[in-house]
Length: 243
Image (cartoon, rainbow, N blue to C red; front, side, top):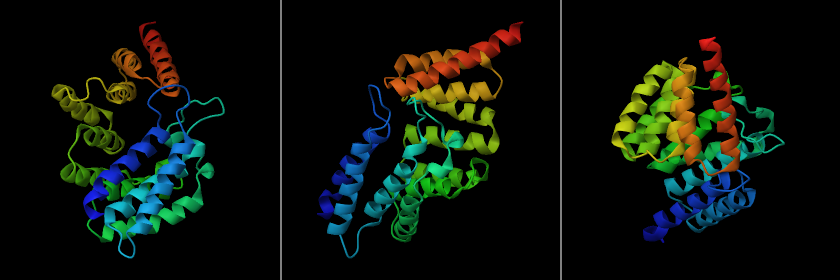
């Protein structure tokens, strides 16, 4: 079992991710996949008792924390609501309460990528309001994650956190490094993130171009509607700037 655990955890997390943010089609969320992944995570952890590995515990905590926000992530029309705009009273507090001790347990062991990601999710879930989020701690945790599991996706997420601490201009410099690597050229969230940073930095024309690129790559209807709204907003800003 220990030799097969990493592959099993990877598959469980892939199932969860497809439920959390469906790759294609209409609904962004597939609750059935999220629930099934959490069930499998609990089952694997029970099989590894009395001393489950830190990463198994971390993965279960991570899924519980992400899933706790499910009811706040979409509006009644199925449109995406960003984390800082979500109604936190809709978050499942019982799942958060279950997950937080699991995060602490995972970090006491030999924490790996799932445990560090769970710690990041815990920081978000412990903030009563978006403005109370401890972004410096999240930046530090992403720094740890970059060291133990370097990947362009981790670097992209760290850039988003850096923007919340140091501003969008600093994040754009980090995104330039990712751009030059070419590793995320066809990843819509890279271009959506760049667009958001340009929008926040007061560059609506450049933001619009990045939103168009993100739209050309996005395949989920909910995400596409969100990007279309953002594109319309920055195009309006651009017209106002010229008038």
